[in-house]
Image (cartoon, rainbow, N blue to C red; front, side, top):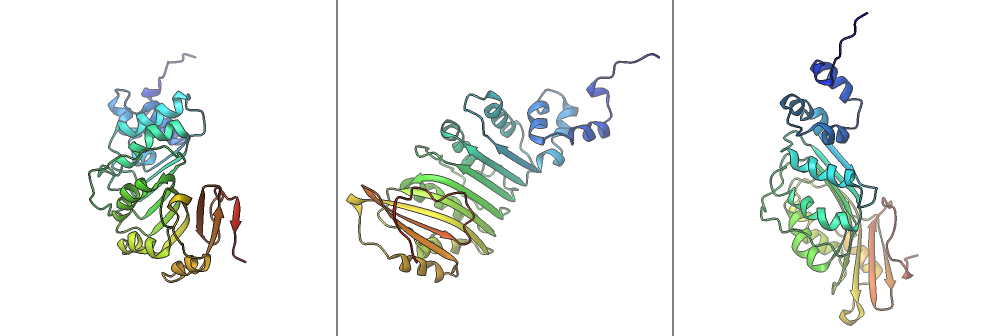
Length: 271
């Protein structure tokens, strides 16, 4: 029996979709997007492969595939069908190189985003300046896990959150250094939540650290918890930690939804 040689591109679109649907969409995009073939571009840019992008980087910073795939995929096209974007498990070098791009993704090019999840832990990271300060009207779910200093929180994180006027759910895991005052419920409400008219769910862990040479009298654990109760979050707990050169306040929603409490040493825990 004669056998003909059939290449991948000889298959009809229906068969190509069937085959590619069996694969991880990130692998499909990395392998086939922008390979100078209009037919393949049309197929892989379909919402089947571009509605949800989930980058979980677990390898070393020398893993060319992990780094190159994310950069190449995010820059390859405009993603008009993109609904959910997740960027998890960035290590130090990747974070310092890419978190600028992560914030830049909210400069207006992805206004159709419904959900955006970012997880980066890096204490020397400098956030980008995003010139586009228009609202992000379609963003309903936002999760940010980040370690930052005061200047970054006040000048970058707060303005970003205020653009999310239609946000419904916010997950915030932030560790903030070099403040002169602990973050409490009153500040969170006045600086963030009042700007979100459809907001109904807040999951949080907020750690604030004050250097002893900048230390001023602070609210008690009960007082801090009360500031959250006053804005409708009565399921909250607070821990005060004492270090050799600083004092930290860790306030979080209950039940606790994260993996760890950071930097707890000598601590005062409510009974």
